[in-house]
Amino acid sequence: MDWARANDYVVFTHDLDFGTILAVTRAEGPSVLQIRAQNVLPEHLGEVVMAALRQFAQQLEVGALITVDEGASRARILPINR
Image 1 (cartoon, helix red, strand yellow):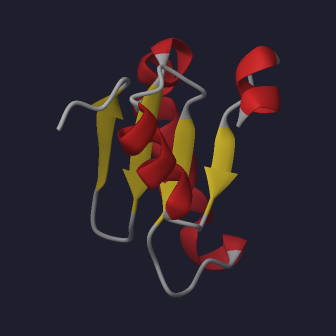
Image 2 (image 1 turned 90 degrees about the vertical axis):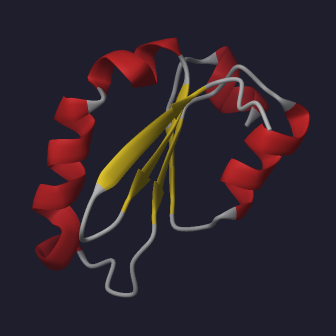
């Protein structure tokens, strides 16, 4: 997370722990795009992920947790307030 923040990278993950880390620490970055689906193969989710990247490009630039699943994508701006 520190390396991604320092180098302006987005963390792309299937692991929900990254969102938890952002929430608990109230961090302002890095942005995280997390996949919530059983089938994570590019053939299955590729277009959904690309659509989410286009839809939330501005949010990713300022710091956001983007959650992508097969039915919908949503963004939470960082830091995450409880």
